[in-house]
Image 1 (cartoon, one colour):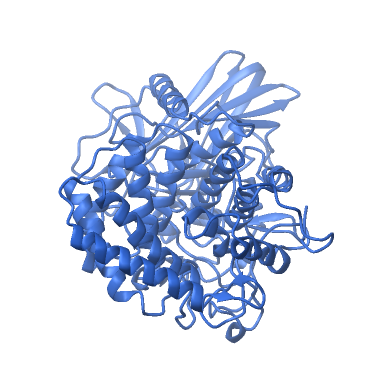
Image 2: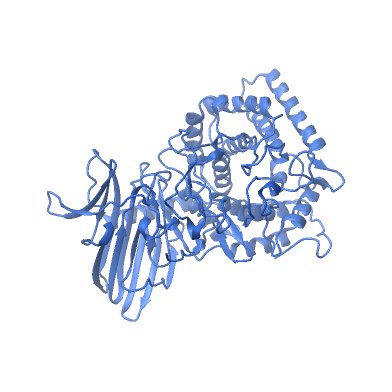
Length: 620
């Protein structure tokens, strides 16, 4: 079996309904249709070509790497260029992004820019994560146009473009020769059996509409700081993760890309976490004019959660909770990293922090101009009451540990945030109940004093991962952004310095917490170590900026940006020793943390503080 390409080699295209990953040889080894959380029709990324792929590239015995690739400005329309002795080929890849109901479709336009180039398309449709193959069959429509279709369990995939001929084991291929100025367009479209047959797409119009949609999106970004290009790129990624039909926001469009090659830390991120979605909305609001996206998310939130007593930490895109975690034994996993999981067992965990992020995003949305909504108020008040009744319990925390529950300090701080933001929103309502507000303020004060008494290690001047412990956790870097304490408070500064000292790797990237090979020794209950988290590393940039160490923060920011791939994409983690990205990609949390850091570097900070003694903090 061929060795898969590094995770950072893949470039996503997406349209707010689904996404595909494209490698530097012009192959798509990952695509779920019709939605992000639907079964994959191409799953070669987690196995090999037998599990589904679609390649489009110059005709060659061996795959040819692109000479250059780049996104059209401000969006996820990808241009790939092959410079060959006989000519130049450009392939433009995109998923049509126009209208609320985005088509479940991939379009690829091959164009010869110079000379003459032979172009080959090879496809193996392998529904249900590669468990089976669906051969293409030729059909002729009433207009005489030849089309190709593959059917599987109530769905039809239409492949339009140059004629494909059947090959072995369900595969099909086509070859065309293009002269300068000529082009060939290909489209793969999903259709539910019984629905009207989709027309042959007008690929030129679809491209124009998609480029206009992405231009409108990027025009919403008002951030004008020195990292504008990076923010525009990350905003595009975040926009592609917003499920346009519902307003839900997924964490990433992939599953089971490993956090350690060959390890068991492989998770399905194709769902809507309340925490990640709230953070995405908040960072988009900080970066630009995204009130409409906040409104859609708030509507999804209210419709999905229903009553607060039934609130979960994550949902499927349709708002259901069918997230039972199962293992796909037929897939060998990326570079042999097993198990390959679908669903997510963390869905039923108690994670107290998520409601604080929801409350904070709702406040940020109103601050940005979103009008109040009585249903959202009722939901928020109910979530606050839920937090009041559960805050005394241990939980699984922001990192969704699979080990024993603990009283995580970050969770308790975010419980305070839930009450604080609820109070601040209710104070704006002319009919607020004074007695209720007084009670909530008292609860917030109690939460605050409890965290200071039990989550702070006075001897070492740092907040700790959990009550009564000595371990550190990078979620504590978010402390200066919560308003729990001022950024220049010595306890905040001490915590940031401690995290730098204990959790920064030798080159300045930051771990979530310390891990070891022995599962019993790890707080998360999992065996093996993991890479450094991009989000945590950007959080350190933000924290340093907020306490006035902007020079150090900028140095770290610049070094982190250099770790993106050639088209600006970040996965979840980075392995400094191997020099490669790890985990699901593109990772929303990484990109929203990038935006957070860029905005923080442009904000007024605390008075400049002296750096620790030389050598005390790992740096780039």
